[in-house]
Image 1: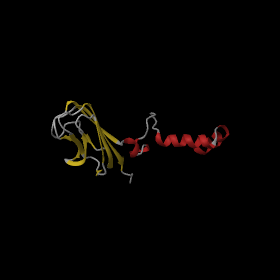
Image 2: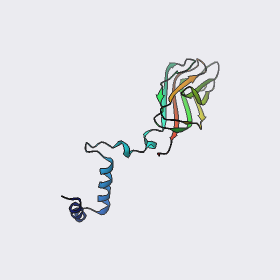
Image 3: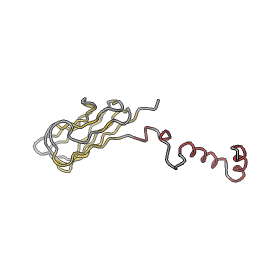
Image 4: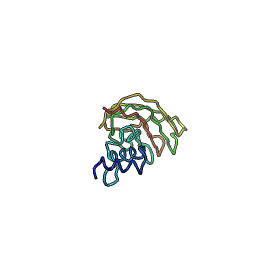
Length: 152
């Protein structure tokens, strides 16, 4: 059946709005019912990186998981949560992109959270790591939120 004949028959059975919805779905759904990658905007795919430091936090670089930046984006915030607060001093955690500092947050002595606003643009493919200033605190979860660059 041709598209024209289908449209004529379909209009008798289905509203124009429903026809438009089904056509739109054909544009984003593959034959195997999976969503076509190009149908999902980059802004939906990635907007945060999550790092973990299990156990005692050591001083140095690469103290957490490493991530490759999935898309170019402007970092907005970095937040850390610790199960065990640093004692004896403040803990500085620095988000790094290819070895350069993007943002440093401070978890104060006796506290279990830290927060920092950021404004750096990091290109896709950059190696993202966490650097620690001291061996203080334990079991950290760090969330670095970013706004993906608009699609070209």
